Image (cartoon, rainbow, N blue to C red; front, side, top):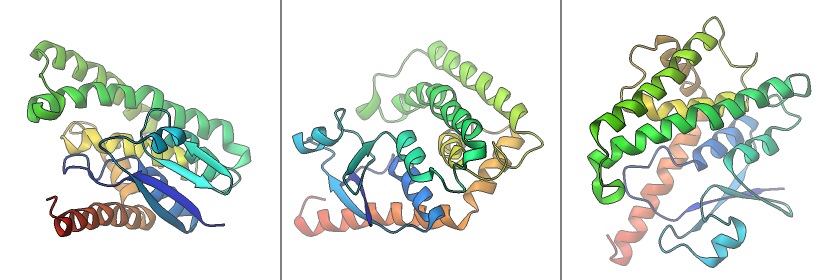
Length: 224
């Protein structure tokens, strides 16, 4: 049965490459599972979107009769019973998945939002005071330092590559893009190792291709 991935119809340049539908695309590519893509408007958010996802966010998937949102839940659903979430390591993989989304990503988002508020205040402003941003960076560095130590001497978080590595890599790519992984060689190598996987490269190409097609459609309709 073909799965349907639902994402936004169009977004400006700055979030492209980091929208969370990429996490789902990556897992689907790892599993060799085909999928279709449908879109919902980013602005204004629609009632049809809220019926699927009460917060009008993406990604959402439709898998048979099941409609599911939240990237972590989607990754668990897709990975269940596969090499990405095997029964013998299910608890350990889930532990690291939650660590990525509940511990590391919270610190990343807090700091990144402040960085973006300084750079593109029309979307994220007003920029916070410098000491607030510095405190957020200190909190992020605390999480990164702990993770650097935990990941040392292992290739992947829970034995073989898993959905936890998909989630953690996607979380870490955000600070990496801002140079915040400098000084964390283990984490830098970890992200590079994950991003070298063919499934990631295919997922990223399709993710970026989606926005390029959206740009072309807007240009053709005179919206650009």
